Image (tube, rainbow, N blue to C red):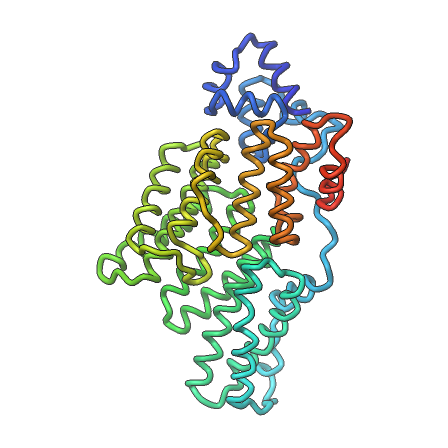
Length: 404
């Protein structure tokens, strides 16, 4: 295991865990967790720094037979291929290149509006397989509606629905680590919002883009997108403190907090978290502007996540005791439980971590079984359990596709 090799080379150099932690810019608890195998190093830049300090290669730390730390890429269900094709093609190209014009009526737009109304609730319920073909068809129909609508009013309505649908597609695909498709959807959402002169929707599209970069572990790019948007929103809020702008401003600071934590910038992470908390308190309630679910509860959820990112499992567990997620979407509740399971795994609380993952799976099976962190935690729990893991843990590992 990587952790055992790190411990071997650290001891070979005569370094204590405290000394080694200082050299790699991490905490002593982080080093201890890595060496014990209860925490993975999932960023190549961090692994490279560890290797440099130990004067060995990354390949040597990984070992020739070490499995890839990232989740395996499974075959995509047909439903997701359909959505990817809708995003990567151009469904209205025939209309653009020819004079063919099919009739389009207000009644048809009403049908599309009703279909669109189901999109965000399904995203927040993580009903991805069910939603993918619906969204693919909706994107194609709305792209045509934008070009075939007989009046400017109907065209603008279709553009608004299309921009919002692309936002939802970006959110869903980013959660599934379908990052190239999420990137395309976020870019199209921004383009459509700009055409509509809808500046807050442009900012929301960049929020999706920032999450794509977080999923790709491109921390500096996530920080660039989020900080640029947050600065612009701050200037807007000074002139007009509208609630939607405040929600987006707070949501971007949560992105920045996560990004800073992944770079082990503890002070910066807490600074952005504090800004998000102050913004949430200013709003005074949990909201869901542009699908962000921003509010006091989401800030509390992120505080737990950031503590886990920083290796502070004890703090994460203490914070989690005060969080009530019952008013949040199933997606947010499950994500909180995954973070909780990771913190419990760090503390070798195998039974508690297993229970948290089972709860998350019940809430959002698709999200939980494919989530990188959830899969990592299951692998860690299997490793901690030794040769004879609990039957229910082995069954969970089988469902998550992480059995050796």
